[in-house]
Length: 401
Image (cartoon, rainbow, N blue to C red; front, top):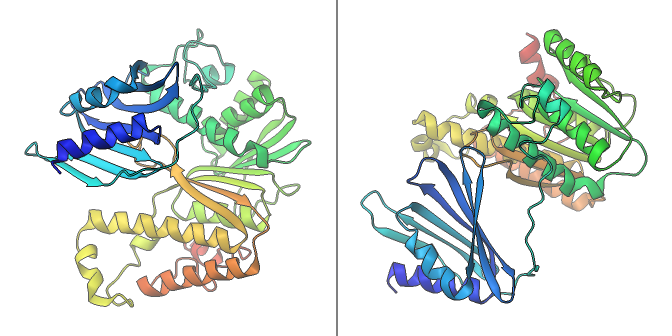
């Protein structure tokens, strides 16, 4: 089948058959556009709603009846160089090559119909133009609530992070919540999380942000006092040695650099945190250890000789090992994108929820961890690295020395 015919038929199948989970149009020619996303809903028949996200923070909407939707999406080829179709009957990707040739991969077949709501109201916790004292104090918006142009990406990141907290909120226990943000830095998400849990969810929260930099801790402490976040405090300390007053319900960590993420995850699991949300950063440790003398031998050489490809491999390996360590400690783990990759390359979110996992599954995760380390000649975590109950002393000593 001709690529255009295949794409059109797949669009019709997904939209008219109500199997469409998500449509993404990316790589736009208009640089003022980030991407366009499409979903279906029921409004006197199936309707495709397109949301166009712009760099100035605006979101434009267009609704199309099912009979017109596929043809309209096809007309956008050229304005967007890539289309991803995610359905219950399979996924398809269409992209234009540098020479303008349409390439289509994947297949969309029959699948179960998705649940169609009568209205698709996007949940937004933070709105540009509304006054939030913590965003004003942190320099994200002005006194009238208008988000500064240079802070729009940060604003979107904060709002998106709140959605992930909302997703895991049912996993948090009742009563006073005890929350830690380790390697908190300037604490944009610390303040946002505290605001969300106290103001939106109406919970009593005791929250502690920890970081090594005294000037940052002093700044954050003054902001918390200024805006009246009485349950939020900050401490200057070595997170490796930090001992909280009790087992945390939620541990947050945003872009803790390199092995600091491993220290956060290790301590969070050792303390038995109910939920862990972490966005890793700067995975240098594995990159420095990759070599052709591992079990993979010379087969790895073509990957390692190009620094950019080598770094991407190191990033994927590091985060895969982190997930396996968490699973070995009894956590159900998934990985997702925090926000659109065009806004930041440091975009991965590791989400872990403590579960009653069988010893068989935990042992399988340990074996997967050890196999990966052996295959690539890695000893990132030192010793029995798959045991999350043991602090990462070896890698941490590299920092101390």
